[in-house]
Length: 87
Image 1 (cartoon, rainbow, N blue to C red):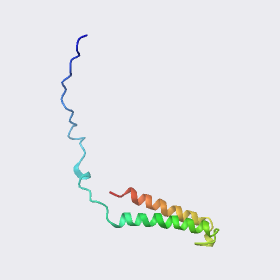
Image 2 (image 1 turned 180 degrees about the vertical axis):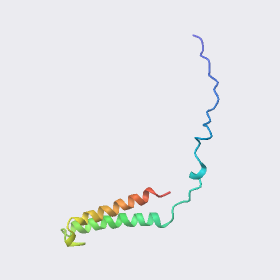
Image 3 (image 1 turned 60 degrees about the vertical axis):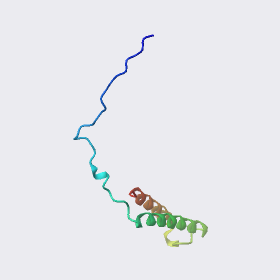
Image 4 (image 1 turned 60 degrees about the horizontal axis):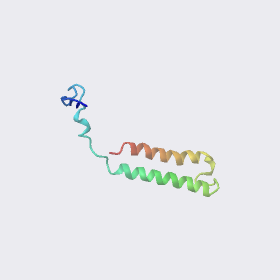
């Protein structure tokens, strides 16, 4: 059986107007407060929900009722938003 020929092809280089800019490489790292705040929000949100359930819905704020769930989960969602900006 005859041997197939090997194609000799140039290496692809994208056009200059499509190349990504170097701005991505010059981004600064995240400040120290960002991951610390995100961890505090996660712990606070979980703590809020645990206290709410273990106190049989009397604490942290009895008059809020089920809005206590929104506060706990809102804190955790806020931490995820912060962590999405972490570099």
